[in-house]
Length: 200
Image (cartoon, rainbow, N blue to C red):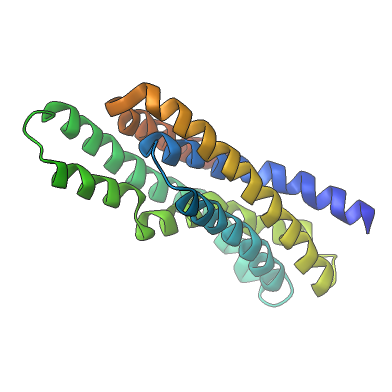
């Protein structure tokens, strides 16, 4: 049991790095984020990191051949999702800088909702955890309850790493001010490229 705990925790740290980076981006984008929202964001990433290995484990034990074919698509899916979110943030950040005097407070609030709304967070959660599907192969030798326990440890580790990322991002976000959205967009694009290149 101890070995399973340690292995799962280490796996969780490795898998959480992309979610950690995106959490920093979210913190950068909203320096005044409330604690409740921070918990919700970290919880979303933790949920996806919990469910993806279980889905992978299930696929290995049911439709393994089809899952092997789908694995080839994982880097492309992560790239497309993160390029979409990062590109959108980058464009909005540039627009915001160009119309600092013209944009109303309402427009700025709407931009914030687009960047950190539920749908964007959902897409981020999938994009940063889709590679965790491959963990299904890593834990394929586990029984169901062992796989469940492992996924739970991965989720807990992810949650606390993401909370740390959000806190760090919020601190930097206060310093970067209006440039935070541009920096965040570039980071997301970089993560997408890294996941894509690393997938081959």
